[in-house]
Image (tube, rainbow, N blue to C red; front, side, top):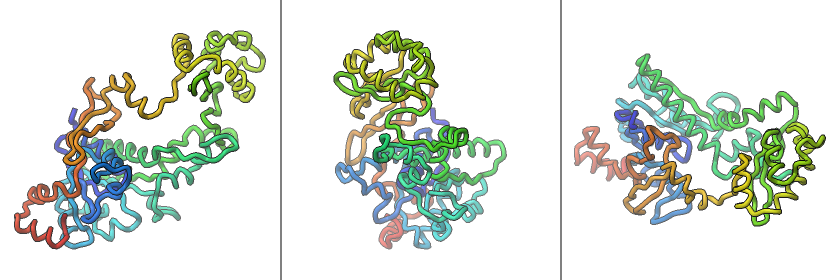
Length: 394
């Protein structure tokens, strides 16, 4: 499905959140034009690891786009962006506080020339309030939102969520926000200002923890792989490695005990209900751990799976990517990059009409499409050459 075919997106964003949103819009058929700085492009182009001078992080977030390199600090650079936006449907922007206005690419300026424009702005803490101009970084929002205080080992060090969930989540929410605004524009004919803040995403992820705090008055604490509302629901050590067990309700506890030879503890006063097991978490975990060491991970997965008790081996990423179930989902596709060659990519986590995920194009080189895009705007060859020589475009 290409439901966004014919939709034009001007992507002024960089790093993770905005680029991920643009990549998803492109996967659904939108023409996404990525505007980058002439000298260095998106910050992630410099990030490690690298292959043939290309960054894995940039590659992961910038499929399905064309790249034009523009010096937005020049009058002619601003003019080019304004021309791009004049007939655009969507703009993605994530500059620091006040920078977009200084560069002449703020909502008021761009929407004045295009009232149908969907303008999506991403910031760290929102544009209002005492931190309205503060920059936003994923790990800082993990810390600020209370998320970081809930992760790590009990009585141990805190642990950062390794995969930048605040940045990635903001990109996903931006994607849904833009789609909703396009749907609304189809009814009203009017554009919209769509605002995302990493802070809002981070606290959105804390939703049931916040409600639990409001109910109990107790701040959540790090529990390793454990869960404050269910037990046993965490990683255990089998005879040959770790396994995740999730006997999260009383029926599952009963089935687990039958498989593990713990029938005497199903209705025991210390373990009879989930609420009691949570209250006696240390005792429950100790009881279960003693049994888990009696079988291998594979043996537990087989017998607990047959008994319909949730469990999983704790895979390394390489093991997960190679698993037959992942292959069956047709989530990973391949593109051919001009310098790296064959490139694997995880696609949009939404599947349409039982079709495999696919990219419309590989990630672009910096300024790869500058000439093509300027030609589409009506610039003559000699004018393009002049702009390039002046450093306005790259």
